[in-house]
Amino acid sequence: MENIHRSRTSRVRRRWLLGASLPAVALASGLALSPVQAGDYNNDDERTAGDVATDSWITTKVKSQLLADQEVSGFDISVETKDNVVYLSGEVKDQSQVNHAVEIAEDTEGVERVDSTSLRVATAIDQVRDAVTGNGR
Figure 1: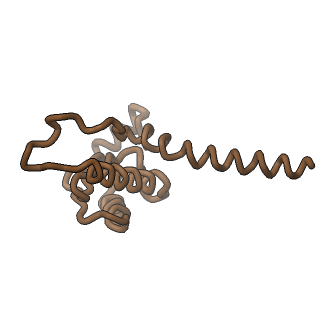
Figure 2 (figure 1 turned 30 degrees about the vertical axis):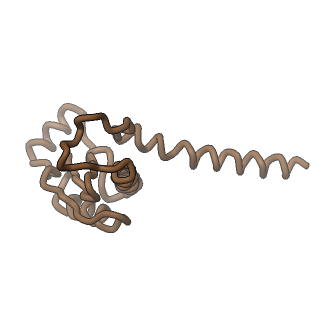
């Protein structure tokens, strides 16, 4: 009887963790889950609720993959998506991290293109400053 109770408790915990992980990733990443407000897009750029939901889903998938990855710091990379184009911004340690972040985004289902022009590599001066101030990664 005790094993049945533990098994049921374990399943409930797993479901709760899985259900809580997506919102937690969204909050940790600063992902806005608010609905699109009137005036956010001009009349030439009519987007359906489905378009916005797809973009939000892509953003969430890319961000969660970056957070789970060991080679890049997902906390230092912001992700936004519009019309299935992922925009990466923030600061990483080197060009290989930029390349890896782009690869992760490109390999995500639904992504048509990745724009990483706002994702910059920290300079040696930035890294020394972060080490001195304790803001190092």
